[in-house]
Length: 291
Image (tube, rainbow, N blue to C red; front, side, top):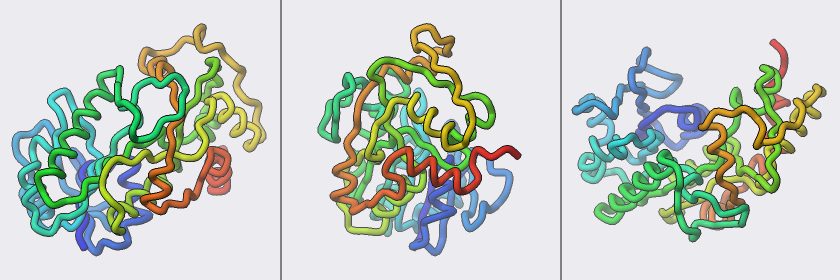
């Protein structure tokens, strides 16, 4: 089977390297790749701002059995749909499409538990663009005989991108905002969810991809510092902390996101059900160690 990945970012690159075993050929895109291959992945250029696509990418799509879309939307909409919707819809063997979105599309729910039936009312432009892109992929699914899976991802962490590394670098903060929680997911568990969508008869639709325990961010930093055996950064009151507008915006939304549908319909057992298992696993791999 053939897999095309559009947008080889952190998650898609991890999936290609550690999973995707069902596929004999994997083609991936970056805006301007500097090499022809990344491990087993054949690299091709894809620039959403361009007016045309590399003919090799069009050929790969025509021969694809599955498509993973990790490229984000821009001010003009979803670049993949803008440039490739007709080619994707007409691809004769393509039956499975996974689109990576974000739980940010739900907006703020005051710390309540929500599932995929909750209202999606994003407040910021990034999440509004994501929700519009989701609608485009859902429409494509209605117009062609393909299963489209929209995976709404929680905050992603994994090798090289985690609180242990921030503690080592001295950039970790322990901000405290009363009642605030964040939802998280290890990149390994995202990859398992992608694989379940692409290689099993699981039904298409929207899935929250998140672990079992939304938690206050300061608790995660404290636990990681204790596991590393280092002094945690001091607690800071959120309202008084000097933060960029982007960093402050993350704290404007508060929700606890359920993963029940993911577990039931994708039959997914999490490798890292909470941040504790995730941090312990990363620590065992040497994350956060001084170099």
